Amino acid sequence: MQGALAGLQAAGLNPSLGAYRFCTNAAYSAGLAGVPTVGFGPSSEGHAHVIDEHIELEQLYAAARGYLGIIESVLK
Image 1 (cartoon, helix red, strand yellow):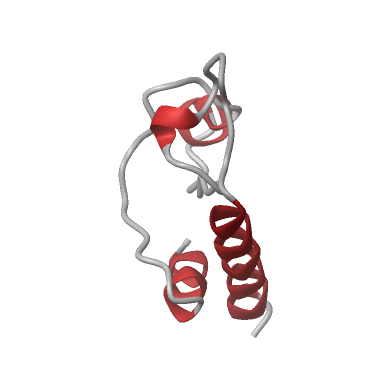
Image 2: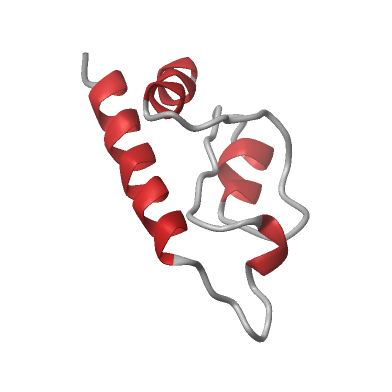
């Protein structure tokens, strides 16, 4: 988990620790199984799982940088 956070920071993003206010599969991995779990996505929580769900192109580009940062950090 620390590697993922470091990768997001290296990608110029500002990750924070917290919990989502909607359901994800992490309800099992982090909740029931107790596995440290990272939730990361391209948009804000307020735009997720709603009727007009969408992202801006810059959010998509930032997410791609974030995923690459996670991969590079975790595979070091």
